[in-house]
Image (cartoon, rainbow, N blue to C red; front, top):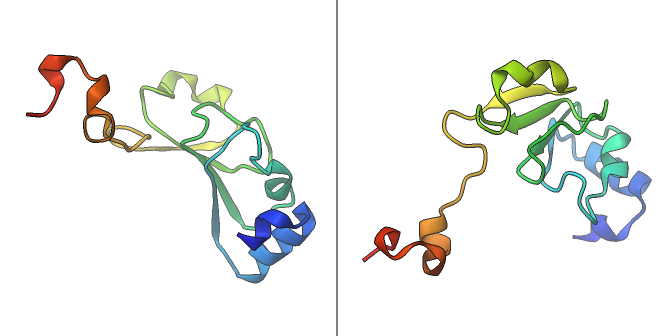
Length: 110
């Protein structure tokens, strides 16, 4: 997208101009994650999801999309974010559908 080719300030301004209420970070602390854009707080609610299942420890990330396995309830005090618990799994995928060749033969679809 064009926003990726601009400075963090320009990207944050463009996001803010669109009036987004929720901005979701899918990268966490990975290369190219553009966290400097999130640090400028272009949206009122900023959520970390999928890319990193732990706390970001960043004051500009307000929520974490997780589950009770990745983030056991007894560890909530260690998170800086408000936790949004998915009922079954925070990472929605299907190993069986996406990578059937990696499954043990007895678990492969017919």
